[in-house]
Image (cartoon, rainbow, N blue to C red; front, side):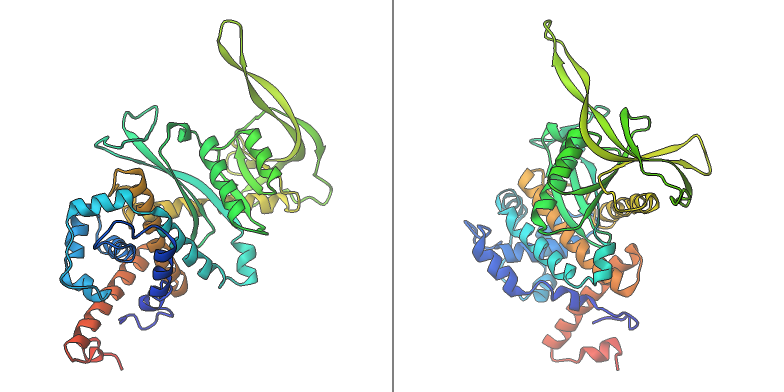
Length: 408
């Protein structure tokens, strides 16, 4: 029960988007319940969801205490006599079918996505794609990415964000994914394949510069807007600037809007077995937009896109929306503690990131519906869940929770 009477949506309403029937159905259609006596998929889901909400720094030890707490069991109607230990949780995370949690994430996203109006769908077809790195300080990861400036191993989370909700996540631990030119294209193309008849435009930062990747996007009919490195080598084909072109792009001034061919680096191995790169022109047209900052004319922004219908200003505005995913990363790191690895096993890491994104979606819908900030939404959502538990306990004891919460 909520104490925030001006809210349009309450936490208990949002929790209902995860019906027990869905969890039971997915349990039957995945391998999530193989070889387990207590921590069935449904119980592990409840445990991780509640643990992420209730703990600022989640660990396997806190998950053990949480599962053995009668309050947690009351909320989810679990057997009060069942208990688990930390080692059981650790082993379960390392072996449980991660696809169970991925499918829950997909089901929840699709439910909310269907509620977007046609106007919203036009607004939220801008898919921001970026990565964030999480380092394991103890260096106990079996497999991880090593950054040049760090000796520690790291995990890379590459995500897609539609402006309200995270719509895709990939976990990378292999060294080959240290480059964004490997991670970002893979995430984008996976999202393209899972969304049929999509009209998305993928917004990416400087991490991706490969002309081959851009060509693969066009081949898969994926529209993109990428911030390119300044003075990138290219050949002009045709200028798109006319007498009617608007050159005022807000805080930028349009300098160039042209169709161009881009160069790509081709690996050459000489007779001495030395490797070097040779620039090769790729004869596939892309659109290059160059704009100068009004505040500092020496600063230029170069955008490459295969989207020809948008104006230069619309392209620049779309790229500005990329900052939304940076805010989202800050939210899940600060409020959901994604920077802390509960499991050092790759499978466990995948389970935890899916669960973190599921909790994030619940909070973000609550935030959006009630017009709240990130921190306030997380705090109030958690408070309402606690109040829900209190109400259930009061009812169990034969009382009236309305008297406790002073609701009329």
